[in-house]
Image (cartoon, rainbow, N blue to C red):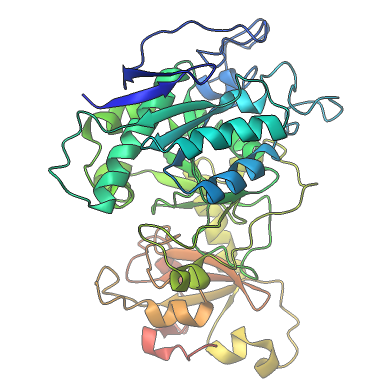
Length: 447
């Protein structure tokens, strides 16, 4: 069995198996059981789903994955603590942003899972509690000392990460055992002001819609200039990660017992896991990947795909709680895409129709640009989508943000809808007989 070191309510170190045993609780708030992480209270409606019911009196727990990158962890926790504010369903007049409608303070809903036992992590948490004037009970820490784990002497980074993720997720699920799921983040993130509000306003969609796999705060193609609408949600079959909500139902019924020994994120993107479900994600990301050094990260990769992500920084933005209804049920989302395609302008010349400086005045600039492409070997490791990705400054991997062969983003002020007729069974049928279809080598280089 995988063993770890728990840091208890007052950060007293003691060893315990990963399946945490019940421990003494401190009743900080009459409506909140610190061990259990909230639960149903008086006045909660019985007809609500598990997530909506839980959110009546509690915030969703946040799991923060870390190892020993202290500088990153400090920035991440400082950023996370600034996201405390009333949610869409709460009174905006609350005098204390930490206690909204009798919900527990955010710092009681953060659990840090450390890979290893570097004392600098513990010291940092103590320092942050002092600088933020937090009580001694703030934060939960679980240490994965890897006793009982058989990695066969390997130092494989992907294997280490996968096994630690399982330890971390199970630790969080066990501690917050009444929570319907957890928000998972890493130690090199910065957060939008509405990071928590985003999840708590939209996770309720999973109560109603079984076609949602997970909810992510990240848009792989969310570069500055390619995102505009802070309230828009989209679907994709490609797991984005980088800040995501994992439901207890999915964990306990499907993923827990078959969690992979390596490359957990690639595994999550396999059809055997997502089946016929989609990931929900925002047009404007709610996380910023701040780390430029990691197991699979370097300066060049960060500069190209992460440094200029246009995540939301508008502290005045609020979620109404109804945004998810535009993408659920799935038929509503499909109808929305179809409407955009049928009402848009089909691109016949890439430069003329997508580059205003070359095409002259455009009186139809508010209409989406519909671009039919044919990437018939789209699963090839040779990345045939690369020239298209380079032109639009999006990922060269066609699977990212893909939904039924469709990608949607902004480019030069136009809303662009890419439709891959080699993959899109439904939407390729909307193509007119004279509509041009482009192949990868048709796309000019872009600076």
